[in-house]
Amino acid sequence: MTPSLIKLTAMCAAVSAVALSSVAQAQTTDPVVLTFSTVGDSRQDPSKVDSTQKPMSQQDYNWLQNSKAWSRLMREISSKKANVLFFNGDMIMGYGNADVSTVSTNSVAGVVNSDLVRYYTQSAFWRGMVAPLIENGTYVVPVAGNHEVQCRSGAVTTGTGIVASITSNTAWGNITCKDVNGNAATGKLGMKTNEDAWRANYGDLIIDSARMNAVLPAGQTVANISATAPGAADGLSTDQSKLSYSFDVGNNHFAIINTDPAGADSTAPANWLSADFAAAQARGAQHFFVFGHKPAYTYFYNSSATAGGLDANAAGTANRDAFWSTIESYGATYFCGHEHTYNMSQPVIKNTDGTTRTSSAYQVLVGSGGSPFDAATLAAGEPVTDRYYAFANVRVFQSGKVQIDAYGFSDTYGPTKLLQSVTLAH
Image (cartoon, rainbow, N blue to C red):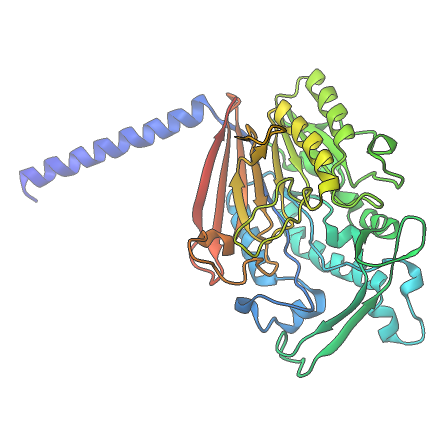
């Protein structure tokens, strides 16, 4: 080795040492005190499947889960050493009436293909998939999605080619829904029986303090689990316990909301959340994070997208606006799913005088956990990340800084990439 090469090598080594020292110093002076990840929508659909997922395996057809995408996302989340995963709903196909009246005892098929049993078996499959996360140090907090709490009336057919064993159009189910008064209803609507089934299948995770504390960083514990749930103040008549709830970890406040309560579909419990945040702030909460299924502001990924969030109809925008006012007032961040795509942005808000402004708060849409992508193909100019399986990873630093990093991989399962980073004001 020549003297000049030796000198260059030494210089490179010195630069590397300084860089590593700087990183180590930064980690020491402002350590991460809490890490959490969030994603939603891993369920499959018996009536449609993304072109890149066709045909789905018999396993995924039986249990209606995108096992390949969801398994990889869980491995990625584990690699980030997330203390908590918030799953923003639609972990199962559901969409039935999970009442005992749907069970026909005349045959085995009548039992296992009933709405009630399908709800429980699909939930059990998803719970089995996430169980290793908790055992390996990531607690799972479930958020109710419309597929868990809503019923969708009508016939469902599995088309040829969705799964190899289906060689001709085959009836999957014929669902009858009822409104909050017990009357037959059409369309999609939240049902009390499904809210009850939610608690039966996911309630043990909401919130098991002992299990959560076991995986939280030293010095951090879960506290102040909400004793009340949304009710009459938000126009709700059914029990919302374990559907909308909140808790603290250190000076971080987490609120989970049901965006499809029975009798008030596509709404947020704005009054409950406002009171909940005020109480948390009085306790000393400094960071506010909200998790729901439906977006407050629909992400119009291309010209085929239609409003499907809390802005789905004109009657609901007043509720959405009240909800978002609380989000902005407390400097909160809203994480959601429902749309099967990824987007992290500050919504553009229309003022009463017709002008617009960019919201001070972020909406992080991560309905990208494996369900068929909303964008069947990418339109000209559409971001490629609209067809990425993605999740958000959030780090809270001792200084109060909060950094959101979004990671994802393509629909062809390419390498995982950092898609976007945002540092929240503090």
